[in-house]
Amino acid sequence: MVLKQEEIKEFDVDVMAVRVFLKALEIIGGPRKLIEYRNLTWIPSLMEASYAIVLQDMLNYTESEIAEFLGITRQTVRNMLRAEPDIVMKKLEGELEEKTPRAHTAGGLAKIAYKEVKEGRDNLAIFSHALQMASESLGIVWPVEVLRRIKGVDFPADRSTLKEKLSGLKIEGRDINEILEKLSYPIKSPAQLLANIKENL
Image (cartoon, rainbow, N blue to C red; front, side, top):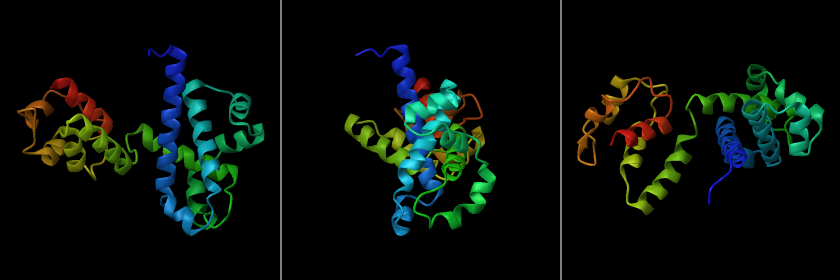
């Protein structure tokens, strides 16, 4: 099945919105934190805010278009998009006890999460688990080992940091140092590292 250009864009938006949503959940302490506070109604608000931020940045949607897409009011969208992330983080701890976040809280959190994702700081634990399952089913294990070794590395990462973390690793019979010498630096994210290694194999 071949996807049309507009379908690819929509797919990319969906994938990015989910990544932002997962990162937002991670920032507030994970789903367990919401369960502890008995406020699972945060989940739809965070998902809406994640889509709002992504739709504005990736597709240049207007407030009205985002409101129509999400089925919420334009004012709610405006509050999400105009949220101040710094203020939200300061207020977040107290607001976690509320059953439903204010639009600006969800929006500020989504903005922070979107920035983190764009800078390569996805929720690595979830990413690693999904990749491990896929890798094992395909019989390809090196991506899982690379991710295991780079856990805790701050991205963008330079050559010396990656050499230190991946020292001694062999991929398809080749020493990792030989592969790392051919990559362009800095590496922006774990996903970029895996893609670049694959290209150089």
